Length: 442
Image (cartoon, rainbow, N blue to C red):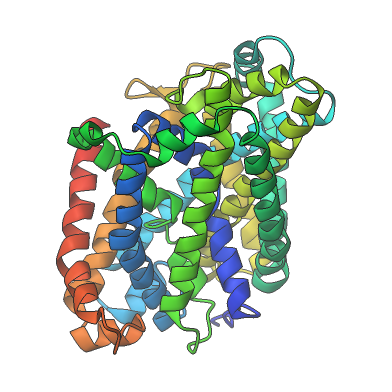
């Protein structure tokens, strides 16, 4: 017997939960180092255009499928297009969310370890040695990974309203306050002028680098959780009368503001201490601890606040990733939320052990990459854009124009014609380009 589908308690509960998914490591960690490597303002401009022209339409498409079907990421396509292969898009999204969470939990565990370090006095000495020593050990990273996953599993275990929605209602305001406090403090360190030039004064020659376009467009998809089945799953818990366009606009605007303010936390600090903004993925775990130590006593407090922020952002995204798999397997196995959450959460955690150990404790490689890097590349370069591409093609080429406008709540708007043109032509072509270049560069 099919279980009754859960519902959000309110429209703002849905928005905050979806915001929690979007405002994660993609904003605070990935955005800053991607922008640093992408040349600053050139990356930001392309990123903003990608969010507006691609992110917004694709988000509306995923929302419309979820709300219309009231089903999980796979069943949604089967209900709307029976006896057709379009459900593959949902299957790719579920697989992507499953795999991403397996290594996301590892990085979330790292963030908890650093939070604990600053809670007990901070990190002194060579931060790169501390980081490599920690991730290269066998037991310690696994303990912190399982603590992080236990928190994630516990919240999803409770349910949509009492677990995911309630946790989002307290996590998102705390995240907002912490981001603003840290940005305000960072702007007092002396590198503000250089940071603002780097972030907002375009270096026009950078626009000739095709890699910036790929990185910025990929970041737009990653940070908005598109192609992972998250937006589709979350919107399936919506009441039919919730307007999608305003919800999507609020989520995208706030997510973008979070990303920019996160840049205002990191770049002024980097320039104040004469560091290279293109520090790469080690920015958070290696570079920032050096800055916190140089700040003296206040640095320990700043470091603690930062890693609390970082951990909460990771947790909010991990919750949404787990919910995609839980929603699917609840129907597939016809089991209760509690049982499925425990089983799926444990399997994902065990898979994450391979990612954790591949960072130094053991040599676990696939195609020359560590297990973690391979899963990251496989999901980011293949699964996410492929899932998004099939999803966009499903709506744009199998739904009538009137159905697209009606179910995305864009009917009667001044830009409905542009929206149809975007979802039929611009979005599919752009996603296909990201997919092809991503695979070639993988």
